Amino acid sequence: MYKNLFKIAVCLAVILSPLMAVHDVWAGGDSASIQEYEQGCTYEEYEKTYLEFYGNSTNEMAEEGNPAELMLDDGKDLYNTVDGSKGKSCASCHGENGEKLVGVAVKYPKYDPAIKGINTVALQINRCRENQMGAKPLKYESYDQLALTLYVKSLSNGMKINVSIDGPARKFYEKGKKFYYTRMGQWNFNCAICHVKYSCKRVRTNLLSPNRRHGDHWPSYRLKWGKTGSMQRRFRGCMKNMRAKPLPYQSEEYRNLELYLTYQSNGLPLEVPGMRM
Amino acid sequence: MQKERRRNSSRVRTLVFAGLFLLSMVLFTGMVFAGSSVDEGRKICTTRKLGNCVSCHYLPDVESPGNVGPNLVESMKNYTPEDRAIVRQWIVDARKFNPETIMPPFGANKILNQKQIDAIVDYLYSLKKGGK
Image (cartoon, rainbow over all chains, first blue to last red; front, side, top):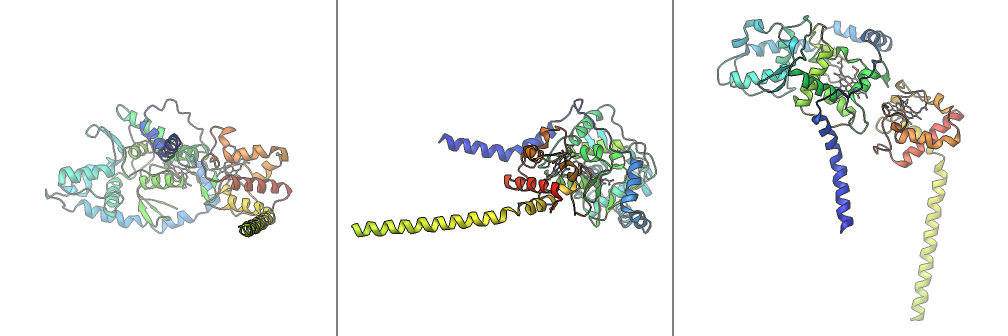
């Protein structure tokens, strides 16, 4: 009888332990105890290594044109299209050709008191649709959602990324950082070990990039996907590679993480759509 | 009644013989295949869904090995046959030597089983003699 109880307890512990590992991440907040790694290499060194390792093929492809440009055009059309019960389009509030949104995206993600957390461009688009237009939110990572995000961000192309982590944003930045340094999954990796400590090293045919430019080019067309995708899709991909359970799009953890990583790109010009292997 | 018992005991004897025969067959094939644990270890180290050690370590005769970890041919030069337990521990759980390691705890997290890990150790030691 007790033996059985014990067995059940052990089974439960085994089943629940991965959940608890994720819970640890949620509980985050204070990152003062995090021992930051030393950078494996600078971005300049990475670019040099990249050329040596892969040659010039990615640049050549980029010159032939980025397939995501088509999506960007569709995003512009969607921006001007009336949708929802209130008979409005994005342009009704934000001006023709996105006049009033120029320069806005370089401050995203940012703290928003209305949601007591971090707001992203993708999330804001859905909040506008629901609250201002009376329209259904667009499914994250759907064509239309990505197209609108791409268009809105492109209005700030060339401007310097300028994400704030002052005031209430700080706490969420720290949470994002804690997530970035938390070991997870069967392989027991964390994000920083690959993108800080071992950057410029090779994992088989993958050259590990330092995170300095992880925040400046999303949404991006990715050859491996054969599609355009968001930064959060990339988060999910890396978590799957770590054999950890990926989190839902626009979950609190991913918005905090997006803030943390975009902040690492502060001062660089925003350039969407990006293109990657 | 007596006849019956005798028949039973002879049946038992046949069973025991059959059992022993099967057991010896199993042991025999086991011995024949023991030599191939080096091959198995090599396969585990080079297969993405198994150990995938080459994603981080140089190993001989593998296309584009990673360079996150040390070259294991060089590393093995520093280990004598008495160090088997140490080499094994690196694979079971490298955190024992380096709490901040990037190397996955293959044994502790049950990515690989004991037999697979033994095969890897056999394979790594074969590298000392030029590998297989």
